[in-house]
Length: 251
Image 1: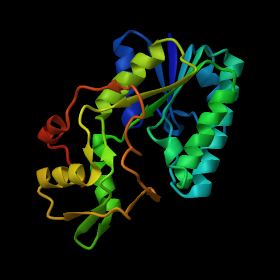
Image 2: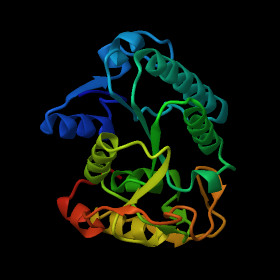
Image 3: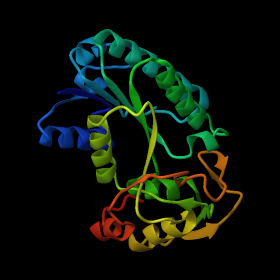
Image 4: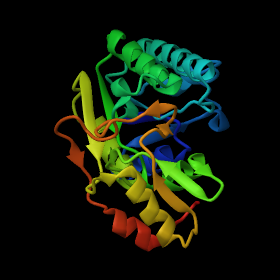
């Protein structure tokens, strides 16, 4: 099958393209760098023509409220319109576990708007809600650093490695549309502050992690279960210890 992967040159996209090609499919990485722009529409109709499945992994380059909303609404409308013309059979989008609980953040309001466009499109779809990626532990620490302290919530987190996200995205895309949402997560569940502390320790980073219930995550004060699956989920196999053992630290 021809499968178009929007955002197909990014962290998850490039790995998803590779996994689909390993299975014998014609996986097309679509991004501005390959001549496909979902904001302007450049190259979009041509890229999607003849595709059975479209996987949307694109992300807003800005987390500012208005910019994120503009990105996800414009990109979503243009992409879904192109898919209707092409007769796409399955639209798959990657979103975030807990999106509905994180609506105090403009970014997550934009993700919710994206999901609502998909649901109203009439195209068979599956929305994948993923937990945070192992690879973003360093970015979380950077965003919460004040002087030499990293102030983080003790809300539970159940992160997943990008390889396992790509595997799940490929599997789900090749399955039947569920016309709803599925959740994916890693095997280890722990408080956010403790998991980031483990990451920094493994990276020999001297910053001190402080549990702070008033700290925010993308502008949202978390409750204990904001960042973990709400129901049955596909649980990946790669543990946090395995990830740390690879020594791939970006702090």
